Length: 435
Image (cartoon, rainbow, N blue to C red; front, side):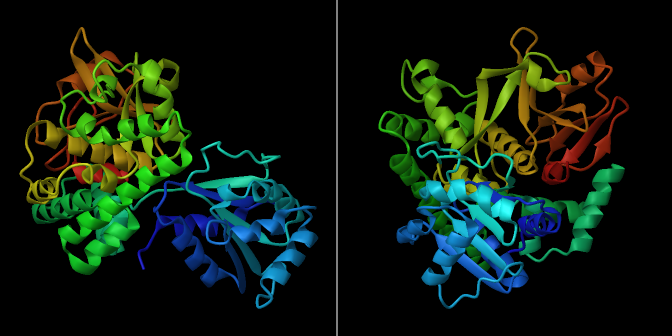
């Protein structure tokens, strides 16, 4: 069983919830159902689980009066073998987007507060069905992603003590011993080639065979395309698929990683495709990094919605858009040119996104200054550059010189930890997981 940080977040919710249900959101196949099921087995005497895709007839439980007593009675008739005991029972409603009245009912479960209720779904942001009354104020939210690099290290058997020693190097800005740093880069390249989707990681752990890994990755990619075909409206189906499948080219084949509609088809414009990008965003199939016109807090005030980079929500899906040889080059560290810079930029963006950061970037066509990623942490703006090798970070140095209020900046490289006098911290690429 893969150890996931989401388990600790579920425990925190149980201990701190205040008359609220929990909605676990996230892209498909990130492990939501598995983690909730394992958590339920370990923490509750009784579990009632309904997957509305597997059991569509269970929607009748939520017809008529949505009082908790009525719903519990219906559940007891449906599942006579389960003792539904107040305070000791978890109600788990999976794929809840398939039952709009079950969404409405969350308010009443929360107010009653005799039973813990956790719900999950893969496309909860898609408004193809609207609950008659969405339970605003009666639910907490938890977002699940694929495995991050730290979770991958747990999976391959790296101890907590070893990871803590790496975090200490990050915190103290001290170099990592060379042999350890080299080994961590080897693990990191394995992680990038594998990605963070649990099924893919488990296949890698079981077989160490990248052909097997590739098969699972491509199957997941096809599943995502199926979701577009199944859930997008008729007008968006083809356009959303074209936008999604162009990400491999947008991010790995070009020096400029700004999303360009002309890469979808000749003469394409935002007017035709922007709604498709928005659909992919709401479906948790992409996340965006928006350009900012200035590098000041609050970055959102300077962000443009029409100029962005679009990333897949997991590296598994990105590498599946290219041929198998990409994995070999990643693992053997033989990448060159735009592909090398692109894959490491995507890996750093993936790490920061999974830690919950909103991503921005900066590009000035006049001065040719560019910052790959910018984040905000504790009210401070942190500029970031990503280098596949050990190149200079001229753009970030000029920013530190110009902006007195920016006191920290990161340059991620294929190298070790270092600190300059102007506040620029050089870090190994894999340490994006610790920011």
